[in-house]
Length: 555
Image (cartoon, helix red, strand yellow):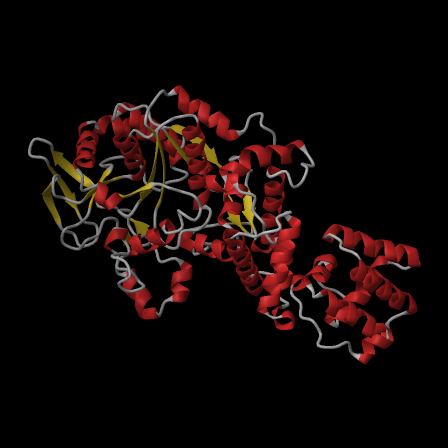
């Protein structure tokens, strides 16, 4: 990556051409179940654009739409596994009703299913540095502005149908609705049974408006679930626009300047283009700047809330700092795919730390890309106050080793070793309260990661003592190598890289293969011939204890 063609600069330039203030950035999500971290790609992009535009002196508003008025289409697989059969069967009774009308499956902690999962997601915004005005769509549809949009759509229904027919060839691949006959973009919640889009024989059948009379301000509909039909007044009826028309109406009402969207919606002739044309031809507003982005997958699989394939923001915060997710998103071009694998968390965090050290002049960039990430991307990832304060962190990989030594060292000693390393590694003799808090948080995250996601090669436990069988199995060369390693650890202060290189040199000087030396150390410490990366493991252990263990093994 280099500064040339950085996506934020490209999009910012497009936005500024609009000469619109305040600049309105928007994004949204349907709370059909636990919301996954893939949804943060869009939010973090919007947040970064907000920061950049504010730094240019622009007035900016950020909106987050919760599509709580969408119908419930299914029960996510992970919720089916979590809840009892009775709870699942109760939820199934609400399939086809608006999500805002579905009860909270967890009891009374929230007013509805929609609010529970929306607020679970929204509650993480501040930690991820996202600040937005939250707008629930079921409440938006009660407002006069949205009622007027519905009336405008009905007045220009012929225009809407022609635009839809124009996009039908492309849209039909994404949407099973067929634009023929009496199709209407306005749907009605049945006042008798509460259905909006009931599922019949496995197919969603929205309660569409069949006729309308704008003079009396009424629409006629028939419920596809209970069969009820009637003329209902628009002013009091619970009506909803089809989602592409709904999208355009929101852009018009809030004068949205820019909204990112997934690549599936942004293909040429796709949903975004159709919504833009609706916005122009029906509502008279040019619509937002389109910013497409690629998939954010989980272990190679597309994250789908309704299918229960998720990794939530709360799960992320259990194992990794929020600024690392921002860094992952912002350092990747939007049209490049991101695949998140929990096993790689230590690499992600330590890569972020390297860029942070470059930013504060503690390390030299190894490439132009490193320099750019430190200078341009890093400031968009952390709170602004942190840019003025050099931190002191314990490297994540070292924290992974330290937390597994709690039984041997004791929790206090683990924290002391982490703090001591942070002081030396960040050249900060005195740690402040924020540093200590961050170090404790890193240890907590590393502990969760080891318990939930660490591969076997990263898990270990120290043998209480070296078995006699292992002592006897060591070759003379391995015994001499252990002696040399003990001497180095006792007399020298080495970094992780320096220690790893020194072990290789010891092997070379003794004319023994390096793996044989590593194998000997693992056997003496872990009782098995393999383990995690050796140098950080040795640095994590108590030095006096470690030197004694190595010498006892060859005594």
